[in-house]
Amino acid sequence: MCCYQTLYLCRDTGYVIRCVHCGNMVIAFGNLLLTFPEEEFAPFRNWIKKCHARHAGAEEPDERSVILPATGERISMLLSPHELGAFVCMLDMADTEWQSQHIMSLLRGN
Image 1 (cartoon, rainbow, N blue to C red):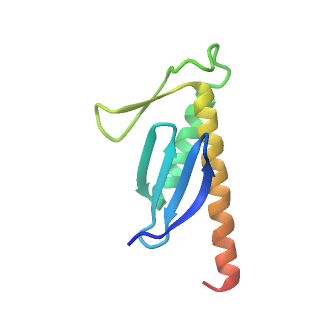
Image 2: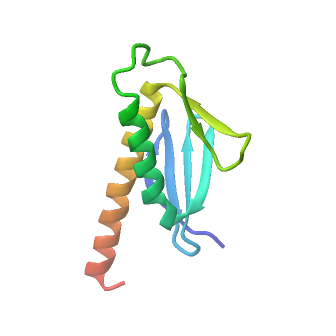
């Protein structure tokens, strides 16, 4: 049975949680819900950051013009550059919290 640790939570943005038993990460952002193994979190975060860098300085930052392919051939995520920036911020904050919790568990000897 899953037991989640909250890495990020904001009512307006979404959340990032991690199961301490199975290691799955669950990311909710807007109307997106993504689930994948924890070892895929860093590559996913880096990919989102690269996408954000490519769309920085867009003329219409609130226009949903950024198409991010998902796992299925026919499924994509559609975000605005502004939303993409908020997504990057959320993932960065979750990563910082995850690393902090890991360091604290090492200090406790867990």
